[in-house]
Structures are given as structure tokens and as C-alpha cells.
Image 1 (spheres, helix red, strand yellow):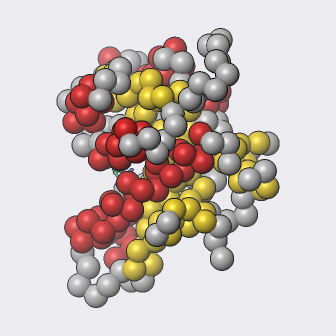
Image 2 (cartoon, rainbow, N blue to C red; image 1 turned 90 degrees about the vertical axis):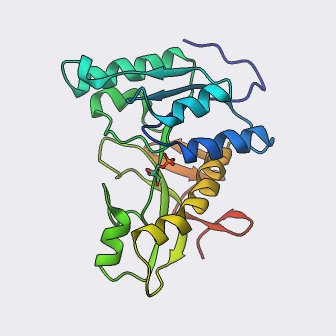
Length: 227
Ligand code: GRF
């Protein structure tokens, strides 16, 4: 058991598989004094992930584990999450982490892991979300931050950022417009966890002590309750 010092900022680990722009947004928010947490570890399933270089540059300890050196996904995830626990992390943020966490390994972490996903969940779990929104003829699109459960992109959604799909949009233009909103959304949700406004109790999110009835919405000045 890791001891907690009164008033110490909550300790956070991040997992990322790729370029790490959402991680960069978290680190920048912290650097600017807007995110009162301590980043204790950035881990990846890809040793070459640019996200790891960003973490190193920010002085955050890193961990790269190769899934191919484990007998199966469960063994990999157990080891990964044990190492995350050993870092002292209280919360875990998945920021472009491209693997599904095994349900058994995840169990001790449920309610303490959030993920950012580029769709308005429950729409378009999984990959190619921009393409699928375009193919469906949607007018609204966006990104979601949700608590992670064993179900792929299926845990309770906490907050969403919305964009309109305009005529002429393609996957690239959607990603280009959405990504800056993701970079505000994820630090904002982590900030709510850090200041205690967002909690997890009895398998569900609480916001300001009340059950969260609908995802919070990212507006120009931050997150607010859905209207
Ligand atoms: C983001 O679009 C995120 O929503 C999704 O994967 C992408 C990661 O981008 N889960 P980055 O590595 O944070 O730049």
C-alpha cells in the first residue's frame, strides 16, 4: 500500500501508444499550473512511441513493455498494471493507448481509469470513428472521456466535446478540428477528478456528489452540465 500525504497532489499514470498529443496537453496543463496532479509514470506498449519522448523531456518516468514477450494479453496487462500500481499512481489515464485492457487485470482499477475516445460514445466504439461518422451521414461528431470498464469504449461517459460535420469534411478535417478540443477535454476531466468534483461510487460516476445523469459538455469556458 502506498502512503498518501495530506494535500499531496493526486498521483497519475498515463498510457499512450503513439504520438502523444493528448499526453502533451496534460503535461502542458500541469506546467501552466492548471492541473494539480503529479505525473508519476508514462507507459507504452511501443518503445518507439513519441509519447515516451515527451514524457522524458518533461522529467516523467517512463516504461515500455513489449506485448510480444508475454504469453498472452492477460499476462501482459497484469504486469503492466502491477507496474503502474508500483509507481504509486492513484489514477490511470489512457491517452491514445491502442490496446484493450484485460477485464481481470483491470478489476482493481475500475473507477480509477479514464480514456479519451474520438466519437460521441456510445456511437462508434473502436477504430475509424471519423470515417464511420461520415459514412453514417452524421451532422454531429465529437470526442468522449469515459471511465474504463472491461467493455471496449463502453464504460460510463463523463464528458464530451462536440463539433459539427460540414459539407466537404473528410477524416482529416474532422481530426484537425476535433483534436484541439480533445486537448482541452482530457485535462478538464482529470482536473475534476483531482479537485474531487468527479468521483466514482457504486460503479457509477458522481458529479458534485450527485449521480451524473448525462455527459458534461465542453464549452468555451470549460465543462458544464448538459442542458
Ligand atoms: C486521439 O484521437 C484519441 O482520442 C484516440 O487516439 C488519438 C491519440 O492521439 N484515443 P495522440 O497520441 O494523443 O496524439
